[in-house]
Length: 370
Ligand code: MRU
Image (cartoon, rainbow, N blue to C red; front, side):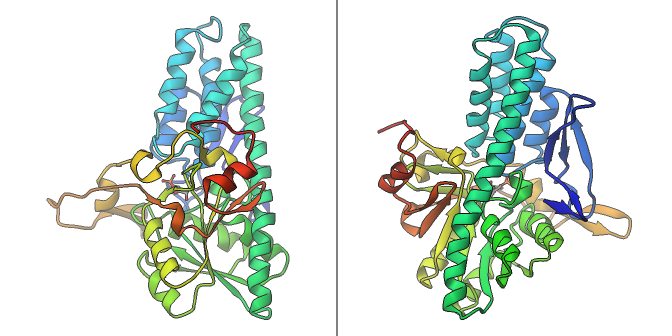
């Protein structure tokens, strides 16, 4: 996507250095900083500390992490303990987004039949790059399918602006191009349809206020940042036409894990008969888990992410303490929205109901737990 006229992605392989670069999302929107990842530890740090975040991008970073593992390998065949252990370390960097394990496994499988260091290195780099390109393409397809939903509302409103509420950042910063939840919005804007986005600030790390608002602003898309608790009120007043969110892991039965607070938006949408859409590429489906509420691992992060808020002061970025010094804080990073609250999924293969039958209908080749 364009940032100030320049094609920009959140992660890219640098052919000169042969390392991998990422935008440091911790300091956006006030600073645009690029970090170079040279080692597996760099990739794990980037995922854990949320230099990169968002399910598809976490997956792509994990895939490049395998490339970096091979690059720094002391030598030996692909099934050496070293590579297996490094892949396991990468897989464990963040628990909720299923794309991480999916992408690491995919690159690791490519390496199984190879043994020469140069072949391994090239295969890992090519596979990680292929995943990135596929995810970019998936997001565009998600955009095209979701665009039809926005067009329908726009027709119903006789050309009036379509108000879309989104939570967290499921934009191109979380993927590669277009985003998932934002892809239909970007394409609608490109088509000249009037759209306006309600951007949940998304505590504790404010991915909505910091990242989604920045992305939409750069693309010239009208948007308004709101507090996390404003959505229900706006829905009651008829100011939201649809909700579109992304997801970190969705069971094949239709339960959706996404950034904490998503469930409450789904409940409010249901109560106000507002469509609640979840946009996701197939890499975000978990083909093993049936009961998302009980089975999806929910990451608990450092309480300091809640206790401190980051913003720009007179001398640049600073963190300030919010609650009393000695009040404990609990930082649950995700929640699960049950399938019954989801109006439909928007995937690269089309729009479908949030049910096992419909999901399997779109992806008949995927196997897993029956
Ligand atoms: O903790 P984060 O920022 O990684 O959480 C990201 C989200 O919850 C996104 O909505 C989700 O990954 C979908 S990204 C296309």
